Image (cartoon, rainbow, N blue to C red; front, side, top):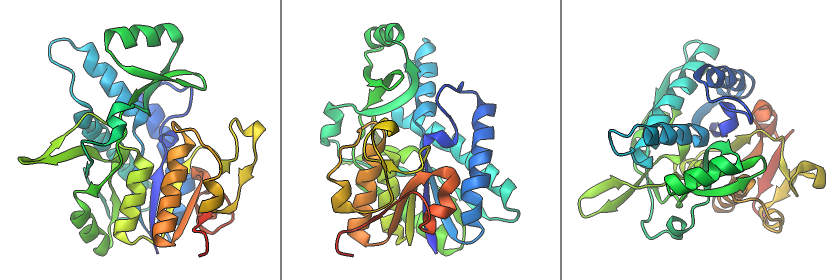
Amino acid sequence: MLVVLALGGNALMRRGQALEFDVQRKNLAAAVTSGLAPIARKHQVVITHGNGPQVGLLALQAAAYKEVAPYPLDVLGAESEGMIGYMVSQALANAISGLEIATLLTQVEVDPADPAFATPTKPIGPIYEDGEMRALASHAQWSFARDAHGFRRTVPSPAPRRIVEIGAINLLVRAGMTVVCAGGGGIPVIADANGLRGIEAVIDKDHSSALLAEELGADALLLLTDVPAVWTKWPMSEGEPLGLTSTDRLRKHRFDAGSMGPKVEAACRFADRTGRFVGIGAIEDAEAILEGRAGTIIKAEGR
């Protein structure tokens, strides 16, 4: 079975933790041991991952150095994809001896006319208090949105249209490799008369993962996060978890665009277009989700 595993940002960072490398490495090692490795021992896997906190930190570091203009988000996305891909592949190789792993920088084409460029919604970077948010909004001209614990910077999140390196990924998969790719949703690029060029955005990793799973013909897609299932309302105390459900029933609920909304939308799209298995839940429950024993399992209506 070919399984696409999409790791949420909590695989590396949990709320309130410092963005230290050692913290991220330890969190990822635990996530790989409990969540990824049990599946990778039995099935072929392709792994994607989030990069919101990391690309936000890189943007802060770039803005702090005044001798050169800050690097654009597509370049910072490539940097974070390389860094996190390195950590994922190393943790997985340490967990499963002899596993052949390829980590691939991945460009993803978007539409320059996508309305997302006019409405930044993708949260990146750390959580700020009100005073810090106002200072950065004024100084750096960044957009912000309220988070459950404060404020986070928001950037455009256009829909993925094409995975540029899909041919190379397919070759690696057919060769039996475990592939780490499309990290952070992929490096956002647009096509023009001169070819491809980067654009200032961060693509949602769940939408890119669903597109990747569809183009690879994957048997299953798991969108892994830090909650055990999709909840009907948030906070969890005000709602209830959804187990086996349909795309039509899920679409009757409203989910936050900055958290569960993209996961649900991506999962429903994959289920409707392919009819294949898709689940959402906690990283440590990954194997149980794949077996239908945990998480939210989503089926296309009538299938």
